[in-house]
Image (cartoon, rainbow, N blue to C red):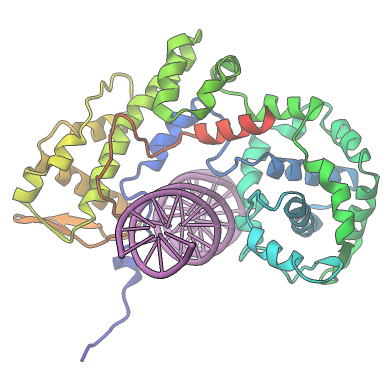
Length: 379
DNA sequence: ACGTCGATTTCATATGCTCA
DNA sequence: TGAGCATATGAAATCGACGT
């Protein structure tokens, strides 16, 4: 017979992410190069939807409170449109839209009761794009409103459809003919002309005199490269000292973070390690990198020290770091070293070291993959 | 203390691979 | 050829950080 008591929420492991507090470190390195994009803001259609919403907010003088409800309806309408235009292209909410559109009805329904995500505001376009969209300053670019007005005029039916969405009282449905949706396709076509230039100027700017953009424009092969390949090739021909410096910080940061992360994840694959097992682990030994930390942040320099220590001390360093990070989250450590060995209590995210090469593989994107994704969609 | 933002993990599904 | 397994993909949901 078992006696179960409720767990004290302060003494269970909370979450499964970032056990070594690495997120703030790689983000800081990435932000020095790419100012506004996030790792999940990588769809140009989502940015186009943000632009359409902002345009109508100003054009129709929609108050803040009413705007949230309008945005929610607009996101649903555009979800039907983008799905019908290209069912293969993904977006958050695609599954429910797929079910809703595949009915015998001739119409689709925009309903305040029918969300396309469990929390559409948080997990949809608004949640993912509001911060990058405003930080990039898209609506502050002079001529934004006129540009959008001109673009929307090319789809005369759209103003009327939006008008129906805006005027509809709370909890009353709006229906649109499925055949109408294709009229809206041009609004989410690949941006051209002024619209394209607007996105290039705001989303593909960088903190190194736009030399990242120039370098990629001159060598399209860079688009298909992994992080380290990209950095190496960029550094070879880059004219910008600043870009080289940012890229080198990113490279050296990742050469420290990624091996330590992999060792931690590898330790999670077993519930117990003797000190001897740790000391003779060739997997841990082979995952070491040798990085010059000159000029890097103090927190990354401290992490790098672990990589210079013998296996047991390295693992102890990681366990201590995890304990500190967990304590900051009012939680308990995932693993604990005692006199005999390492006790592992939390296994989420465990990964073998098979095929891992710390000089080739990276774990963190430094916002560069989002940047490249947006670049591809504009070229 | 609470709410918002959004990065990361997990999960479900699709696709690929192996071997009978 | 196709069952069964492995891997890839990408959407959903969670939960930490940060700002108010």
